[in-house]
Image 1 (cartoon, rainbow, N blue to C red):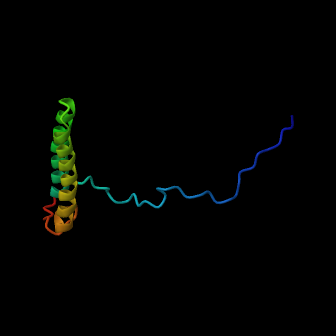
Image 2 (image 1 turned 90 degrees about the vertical axis):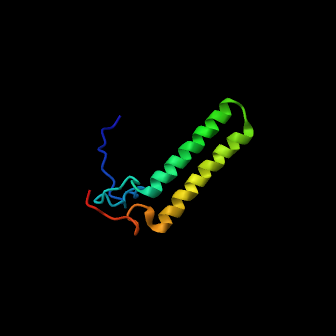
Image 3 (image 1 turned 180 degrees about the vertical axis):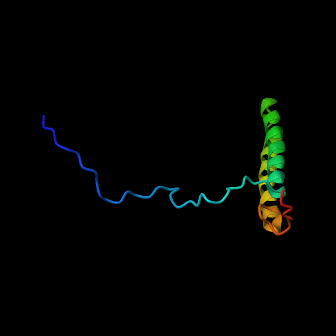
Length: 95
């Protein structure tokens, strides 16, 4: 067995997926009317679908899943209308 020294590689290490992310800004957490509407409608749809799953009622389960999709679309439409984070319809009161 030889005792050879291991030298560090001088090649450039590949960049990771998140290396170009700017961490100086607060990420925000979707605290907007659009996000809240989306989440609440999707939770109602998930509740309906879960109850339908337990009672084995396929049409109601599909209706619950459709309500979840509608919630996602409602959030997207509200964000495009200016009710998302930093949207034009929201007043920044400094709180």
